[in-house]
Amino acid sequence: MRASPELTVTLWQGLLDGDWALVMHADHGEQRLLLARQNLRDTGVSQALTARERAAAKLALLGRSTKYVAYELKVSLSSASTLVASAIKKLGLRSRVELTEIFGLTRGTLPGDLCAHRFDAEGELYVLFQAPLRKLQPPGCLTEAEREVVLGVLSKQSNAEIARARQTSINTVANQLRTVYSKLGISGRFELICAC
Image (tube, rainbow, N blue to C red; front, side, top):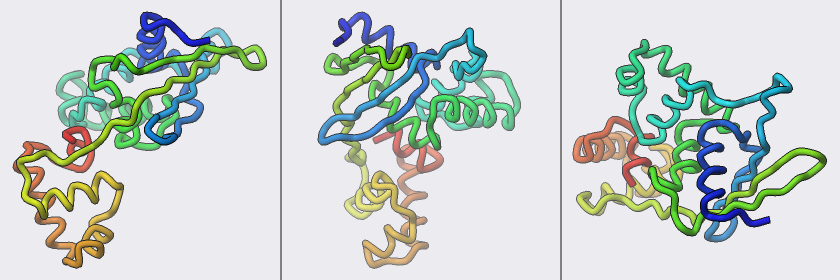
């Protein structure tokens, strides 16, 4: 059954808070599909995020560095890294990049065309979210060569793969990425993806 817009917001917030465990995610055409199962806290197998993990994940989702997360949460750098990694694992993801790609649908606001369908299967409650795919584009302030390198990063290519495709050296790609990071005031690929 399709959820109302108000319930969709509540369900989405529950997913971000770890009240739902992400079971599967896939891109289908122009849509991103996310299937989540309700976490059952009373069974002792809950994957719900702690308050600190939730705060760390939300900062990471905004593209903040681990150093920034540590500063904001007033924890050590290693603790901040552990909190982000734990949140990513509990959400059923593999990396910060995947966190941004999947949960960065909203950029802090819920798009009107995000919809949710709730259903029961074998006694468990599930929700299927559908949202349009975000079109990642390099910022306009970059040169054509820098834009090509950024498009490679957005396509999940390594520096070596980008260099091969552009018929240039790996060092040239690395230098262009450093220039892009400097222009955008960021420090790495993860923050670059968040900036696009």
